[in-house]
Image (cartoon, rainbow, N blue to C red; front, side, top):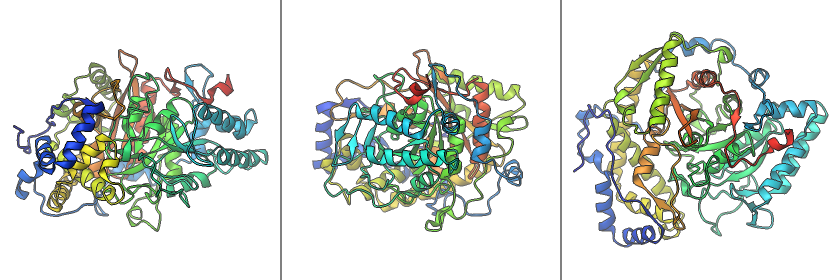
Length: 581
């Protein structure tokens, strides 16, 4: 029997369930669809109705505030406010002091490496574009007269890639690039509209889906800065699974590339591009970044405009950058973030800012919180060892490490689950019949249909409590250190023709990521080495609302601690670095 969560629930309870794939999973999905009572029992046993057991007075959540950011005027860290009094670093400031590639066969190229080559005319955006088209075209399938599909890209159009690259090359030839990302190839999760491309959001091809007539806001910002938009990358269907069985890991093709921004992350990790756009509704930027040895930023909710993103009205999902290095993520963040007068939630944000001390950041005097009981649930020795290593480094360099407690942690987890399941179900059920989805999503839709308006309101009350809890925590600590995932990239079963369902793997994958989505706080995934099987390990810093600048400084510090200023190639590398060798 499931234990009722209390204020002392500073860990999360695991829900054991059998691993299912192939025909077995498809049969289960069918049974749940045609037998609502069975799917109701399934949802109840999974814990989806946990919030119904709670009374308002137990969690001091009388108000209903569904928005994932506090109202304007909340207390902010003095260190952050003082830093913002100085002008922000620019993209040029960041790339000018970048640790440039040494040309080793183990390194990934960065934005700074490519920009330097374009300026010196040792390489042109056109040459890079042609190499990428060659890589993508090796396994291309024609979706329409123009749109093509590859292992990583759901849709790319060679003629548009060439046209953008030619325009960028002309600007460099004239000595007038628009920015440091002019000519830089950028992959975009196929959850964001790209003009001329069909936005499938991981769904199978449906006749009613038409090419987008304009770019999503984040794509437009990158395009206006001169980036070469390659196309829309593969993702798990509607972003519901954090473990893609089709896009495989850059370090080991037997393992998952993560999810749901799997195509974007693996495109960076295999050397096709130094940065990509991902979407994060429960860890979907940070998880594939962690599994593939990359940096990934989930920004504060509302920091990056979501117009043109499938799920743009979600209370948990945001867009953000994935990069080979911390500098790539920082540059991308400066290009992508900022208000848009057409989306009100973006208008309350303070200025987009990266502190001047970014390159020489010291953790001395910082207070870093660690929820010890929560973190101790990790059973992966390499991840636990990485946490201990970074804690030692923080202490050695003058930071304080504070043991913190997050009351009702398990309640927050279920509040998140109710929120995302309700939102996805209500948007997806209007456009796609459940039987047309893959079996994993069919199962999720069948259990989510039993959630009510009362459940969603209860989740909003818990979110209000969660925001108050984290406001109190961030009044005492500057950031919280957590594992990004409780496991490294899992091996994918052989029989996954009809998708894969493994509740234990999903729970271990999202255990530490969903808090940032539920509360709206920013979080930065950082690679910290490899486990005993050669797979990347990731840790994340979670900060108070609008503290992306501090998190990126912590990422720069982490880069120094790990002695790694360049991106590391996985075993499945097949990238543009060959042009430098």
